Length: 308
Length: 277
Image 1: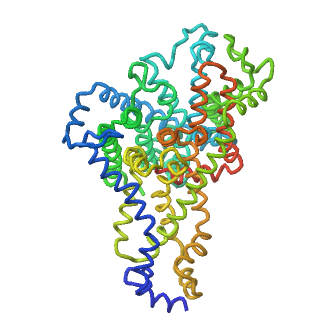
Image 2: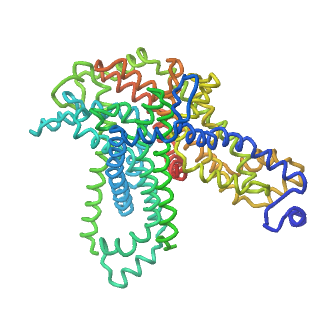
Image 3: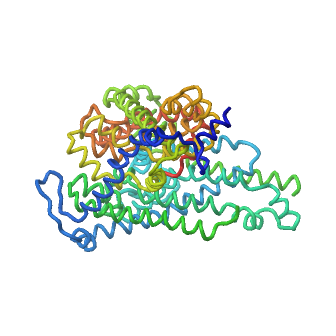
């Protein structure tokens, strides 16, 4: 019976269609999604591009087309370059840090006989916990006078620091918070990747006399994990380029713009000064970078990673 | 490898893992410790983990009295609940159409969904804000909920799942006279339960913890979401009493952590399965 029905309703592509009505039904079913996509995704992207070429400010009666002036102003803006530089530095610390710790944790957990579930749960806690609330905890931990970090440093005779108010330290502190928060997520992805490596590969390596430990890791684990690693690196890079929460609560881009990052610049321009045109130009730069990271991933995936 | 060296290697692993676990847990422990201390002990220049006078309940009481914590939790539940409900309402039929029906524009729609996965929320913030402003919807529940009713991730995830549902099941439902919409709700939704759970966890965690968007669109104290509320409480109480602030922070993270403790595996699956965003 089902077979007959299928013959009646199946097209060459093997997909079910319902002659006549199906066209309308399918469109009706996807209509809300399509409408919202135009309203909330496609439309806004077009508007951002357009606005970045205008001098629009929220509340202004009119706007005028000013060509690339916003981009030219951005190119001459010290704060913008600082922001771009800080975001890059932050990413260059957080990506290796949280990918490395995630991999380390996954490898170690993979090899212990007991306590795997407990370790996984612990490392995953910061991923779940509201970052804003935890940022406030970090703030008090880093309190110059009564914070845990300085009290500990003092008790062993080291010099306490003014962590979040020191230009040369604040960005690094934020990066440590970023690593603390994010590596558990990467650990789970790596754990899944490790489970996917076929046992016989290790057995073969052992028979061929490859010693356990580093040599076997380099020969079997690392290449087999390559696709997962690439994915984790890309996801972490994109996330780290969006760093905002901790910055907004803890430093507001300061001291002296030392922790000004791209999304914070976007937020300040667009929603504190309401310079929508300029904020749109910042958005375009931000989006371009994020898209470039994604494109690089697809490229690499096509070219280099062909193990499975 | 002989037995002794295997035992050493196990011990070595545990030592590193415990060190990492301490790094992860210290902020949580410090939060609990500070929230348990009376004000005089919070501002002590001697390092103590355990309070001399246990003041956790006083601090919790003070937090509930000074900050509208119940209101925050209520708003968190309403906003995340509405967002997920609407996302599901929009995504299910679209995902079914993409997975099982043949129609003009399907490939374009699928391409748009995949492209949408790459767009971070900040990229559309300015125009969506202007749209809400034009509609007079800023500073309302609608401003918190409506921009998130479309989840391209939800569509993608459910579509992948629906692809694996056998066509015979749908044929049988059609023969029984079910309409396509009824198939979505009465056949596809029940079979897609694991994917829906994962999507729910992902969506609720993301929006419970979201700070950027509520910060932009909300002013009224009665509309604050949990992260926004606790941040504002910090600003009001700046430098006064960290014990109370830590107690408030505990209340804000508690619902997700309790849910996590109860359904750990599902949470890890939900957030990582959906880890592409």
